[in-house]
Image: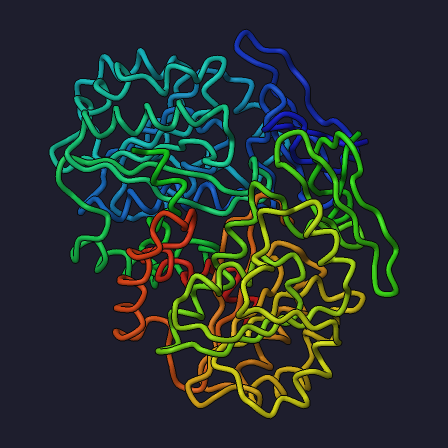
Amino acid sequence: MQFNEYYHERTGLTVGVNKILFSEQTPYQKVEVFETDTWGNMMTIDGMVMLSEKDEFVYHEMLTHVGMFAHPDPRRVLIIGGGDGGTAREVLRHPSVEQVDMVEIDEAVVRAAKQFLPNVGAFDDPRLSVLYEDGIRFVEKVDHPYDVIIIDGSDPVGPAADLFSETFYHRCRKALSENGVLTAQTESPWVPSYHSAIHNLFATLDNTFRISEMYLAFIPLYPAGMWSLAFASQGIHPHDPDVMKRVSEGTRRMDSALQYYNEEIHRGAFALPGFVKDMLR
Amino acid sequence: MQFNEYYHERTGLTVGVNKILFSEQTPYQKVEVFETDTWGNMMTIDGMVMLSEKDEFVYHEMLTHVGMFAHPDPRRVLIIGGGDGGTAREVLRHPSVEQVDMVEIDEAVVRAAKQFLPNVGAFDDPRLSVLYEDGIRFVEKVDHPYDVIIIDGSDPVGPAADLFSETFYHRCRKALSENGVLTAQTESPWVPSYHSAIHNLFATLDNTFRISEMYLAFIPLYPAGMWSLAFASQGIHPHDPDVMKRVSEGTRRMDSALQYYNEEIHRGAFALPGFVKDMLR
């Protein structure tokens, strides 16, 4: 059996599947887990690959550490989405962290991940609280601000569409502490149907935060293998000397746990090809 | 109709095809050109995508300019392979260039490219000579050395396998002038069956040249969307201040012609993820 995901007319990814381990139409979306021939177990939402056991390290390391090291002392972290638990796992590697609130709209994602992707999530860490709520509403009523907010939602169709809205990012800014940092997944620049969503999202970040930058990662099971992410803050730049010092020391300390992220990647990931820069203009 | 290329068991790329424009079993390989639904015309060799009209700029800009700008005054350039003409096109953008020898083993590649990828190659430039010869033998008998050698071969199976051998790179080093620079395409780090070829090739470069470095590019129609390339020289490092000055000035001059390569990419492409560094150890 083959799993297919098309991202541009009839262009896409095809993956060999041995069997379907989980398939549930929830109130929000269709959540599935497949046993693949070579990527371990793979979760999809509405037919779009979210992660596999063998490639998830790229997405989770890149979504997490770029922002976490940028903050001088991240204690309180909010994850919007992230139901598989991989982002929480990477956040919890940072010893300063005291509290992680993960706001996942769909409990089925967490249930499927705990059962079929048991090595991905860090659900047993006492610093983690999992809340089954709508992230967009959650950020409206935050009274104790967060040091880092990570937007780990799915694609801008279905329940995650509002995670690309101006209102949402305004609320996020207000939910951040003074030195607060935000990172988000922002789709593939190679997918024409997402060009305007990407352009608009970065225009929103640019209007909402003093600093906003796109960075990139190689993710083999995501459309075209190229994924963009966003960094935003009210003052900290990801390449400030203080940040680079923390990256250098922190990556040395975490070394054996990291398979993708490192000091050179923290810098190099922000280099954007010409066609991507044009898209942001 | 769908074109499929599998790079890891049953994982791979699938592309919608309207019709087959060219299909020929040559003495060396099977050369095909497809009209695709969204990538323009696409050439494959032995079932592996070489280029499409819409994504070829990434591969050709990255294979060419990283080495061309590293050399202080590239006049004589040798391209091994490169029958579609895209690498020659990028080389010929450098005003110092006086002579480009393109050594392509298979005339069918050039014939198919001229007919079905007419905007890719720069075959009419009088500085370009196309020679239908075996590149491995050609580099043995070079008596007038080249400033830049670019290895633009297909994958290390079939006629291009020897382009990954130690003998070949020793000959290339001898065929280079004193400040000579070499670049090569070196497969995807995400494809397990190429891990040992990549490891061995970079070990060979390391033994053969004083400086050798891997760099990366996002190529949507190549396996997993992540492609590695090699830079090698007897003294010039790609990030030397002189080189970066030439990159800065040259990319400004070429600006409108470049869709991927720029100054930040020239630097950032050399940042390697941990799992890729491990592969090179």
